Length: 502
Image (tube, rainbow, N blue to C red; front, side):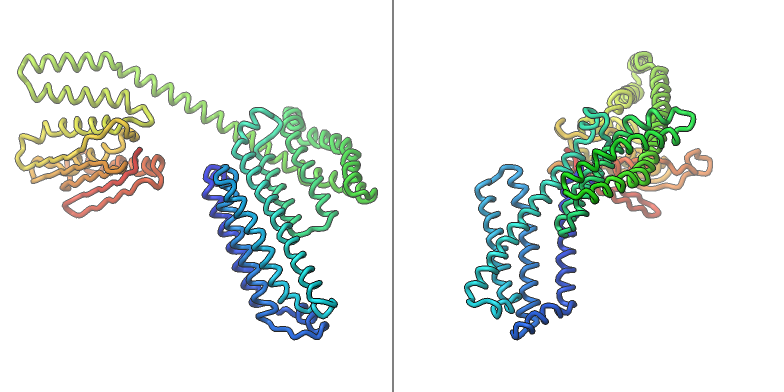
C-alpha cells in the first residue's frame, strides 16, 4: 500500500499488467469458445455463418480497440488533462478515440450481427440501428472510464492525505479510508458488470454504514468500553443499542431509493445482522491490535529516549573542550621538542576526532568534508608506514564542490579495512585508493595486499563488522543507487563502489 501511494509508477505498472492480462485472456477465450448461440441466431435468419468473419475477427478488433484506447486514455491523455497540459490537443484526442471506438464497433457489428438484415425491411434501418447502438455503447464505456478515473484519483488522494484527514477529523481512521476506497472500486465493478439493482442498493447502503459504524466504534464505543470490567460485553451492549436506533433510518433510506417496503425492511434487518456479526468483531480485533501497537511504540520510544540519554551522557564524558585542549597541549609540547611527526599526528588526530564528534551526527554532509576526513586518516596512517620502504601507499582522491552531499563515514570503513588487513611491517605491502566524481556518480576503488595475522595478534580471530555495516547502510540509504563489487584472492583484496550522489 505504501508503494501504491508513494510511487505513482507502481500503480501504472499494476494497471498496465492487469489490463494486458485481461486482454490476453479475452483473446484466448475468444479463440477457444464455441459461438453456438450466435450460430443459432444466424441459422434462424437463414443467413450463412462464417466463424472468422462473423465472430472471431469482429470481437478481436473490438477487444484490441478497447485495449489500445484504455492505454492511450489512462496513461497519456487523462494525466495530461489533470496536469492541464496541451488541453485542446488532448480533448481532440479523446473525441477521436470515442469516434474510433464507435466506428469500429459499428463496422464490426455489421458482421457479428449480420443476421439482423433478414429482420428489417431495408439495410439503412439496420445500419442506423447498429451504428446508433455502437456510439451509445462507446458513450457508456467513456462514462465508465470517467467513473474509474474519479474513483482512482479520489482514492489515491484520500490515502495520500490520510494523516492530514485524521489530524483534522479524529473520528476517521486510516483503515476506514482504505475501506472506503475499496468500496468505491467495488461499486464501479458492480456497475460495470451490470449487477442487479437490489444488489447495488444493498451494497451502496450496508458498506458505508459499516464504515461509519467502524469509525464511531474506534472514536467512541471502544474507548469507553475497554476500561470496563468486562469490556467486550460492554461494547456488545453499546453496539446493540446503536444498531437498534439505526434500524428505522436505514429502512427509510432503502425505501426512498428502492421504492419497495418489503425490500427496505429486509435490507434494514440484514444490515443489523451484518454489522453485528462482521463489523463489530472486526472493529474489536483491529482496535486491540492498535492498542498493542501503541504500547510497543511507547516502550520503544522509552527505550530510545533512554538510549539517547545514555549516548548524550557518554558524549558529555568525552568533553570536547577538555579533549581538544589536552591535544593542543601535547601538540605544543611536540613542537617545542621539534617532534614534527608527532605534532603532525596529533593534528590529524584532532581533526578526525572533531569530525566524528560533530559532523558524524548529521544525516548528510558535503562530500568534500568526507574526503578531508579520508585524507587525514590516510596521512595519519602514513606516519607509521612511511619509514618502512616495503610499504607503499598511494591515493588519488579528487576534490569535489560542496554542493555534492553524502552520508558521513560511508567510505572510511573500506580504507580502515585496507590498512587493517593490507599492512605488514615485515612483508611487502601496498594500498591504492582512488576516488573521482563524474556526472553526480562517485567511483571509489580500494586495492590492497592481504596478510595473515600473526598468532599473537589480538585482531586475528575478529571478523570485523565494518564492511557488513557499510553494506547495510548502503542498502538502507542508497537503495538502487549503488553498486558494490568486492573481490578477494589469497594475496589481494579489492573493492569497487559506484554511488549516485546529489
